[in-house]
Image: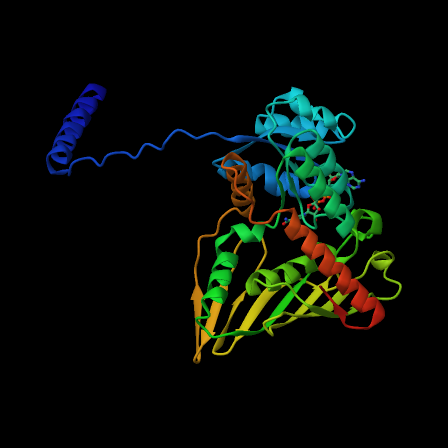
Length: 372
Ligand code: NAD
C-alpha cells in the first residue's frame, strides 16, 4: 500500500512539474547584491537607553558603518552587548582606559551617547586620541564647551558632527525642501511644540551639572532646530517665559516648561514650547501666505506624518520611514571616507547652545535678548 501511494505521488509530481515547466515563463534573473563596500569602525561610549535600544540595533541597517568597540563603566553589560553585536572583547574599554583607543586601528569614529554634561570631556579625549567624533545632542552644557570640542577636533585634524538625526530622514527633509520651494508662498510663522512628562526625579536629565538645563536642553532643542532648518536662517531676537511647578521634586535644579519666541531676519516669527511637565507634544507647523505644512509626530523615531494644507484641501504626504540612526551614522562615515563636511558639524551644535543660553537669559530677565 505504501509503495502504491509513493508511486502515485511521484507520478503526480512528475505530471504537475512537467506542466509547470512547459507553461512557466523564463525564470527571472536573481538580483545578487554587491558585496558590502568599506565600513568604518565605530566605538560607542555610554551604553544607556539610546545606545542599547537605538544605536546598536541600527548598525544592521548601515552600509558604511559597523560597531567595533564599546566604552562603558559596566563590564558585564559591555560584555553581553559585545557578544550580541560581534564586538571583539579586546575592544571593550572603560572610562579610565578610554584614551588608549588611540592605539586601536579598528576604531575610526567615536559616538558619544553619555549624559550631556559629559559630551565635552569624552569628545575632547576622543579627538586627542585621533578619532572622528559624533556627539549626541545637545552638543554640551555651554557654548564654551562646544568651542573647546570644535577646537580639539580641528587641532587633531578630525571631524566632529552633532547627532541631529532628523536632518537625515525623509520627512524633515521634505519639509525643508517645501519651505525652500516657496510653493505655498513666503513663510510667516512657525509653531513648534516639543515636550513629554518626565519620570524618575533621580535621573541625570534633572541634574543641572549632567544635563545643562531642563526640558529646553533635552527636547525643546528639537523645537528650536526645526525653526532654524525650516527658515535656513539664524534668529536675531528671543523672548521667553519659563515655569516649574512649585514643590515638584523633579524641578529642583532644572526648568519644567519654557515657551519662547524667535524673530528671524526675513520676518518669520517662531512660537515654540518645550516641557517636561505634560504628556507628549511632538510637532511643528509652518504657516505661509497660501497655506501651511506640518509634521506630527515630527521628531519621533518612527511613524512621522506630514500634511500640507492649501485652498481648503489637506493632503497627507508619505515618505519612506527609515532608521534615523543608521542614516546619520552612514552620513558621517561617508563624509569621513570622502573628505566632505557633515551636514550638522560642531558649529551647528554651538549655534543651538548660544540660542538656548539666550532663551534662558530672556526668561530670567523678562527682556528681549538680541543675538548677533
Ligand atoms: P541614559 O541615562 O539611558 O544613558 C546614559 C549612559 O551614560 C548610561 O549607560 C550611564 O551608565 C552612563 N553614564 C556614565 N556616567 C554617568 C553619570 N555620571 N551619570 C549618569 N549616567 C552615566 O541616557 P540616554 O537616554 O541614553 O541619553 C544619552 C545621550 O543621548 C544624551 O545626551 C541624550 O540627550 C541623547 N539622546 C538623544 C536622542 C536622540 O534621539 N538623538 C534620544 C535620547 C537621548
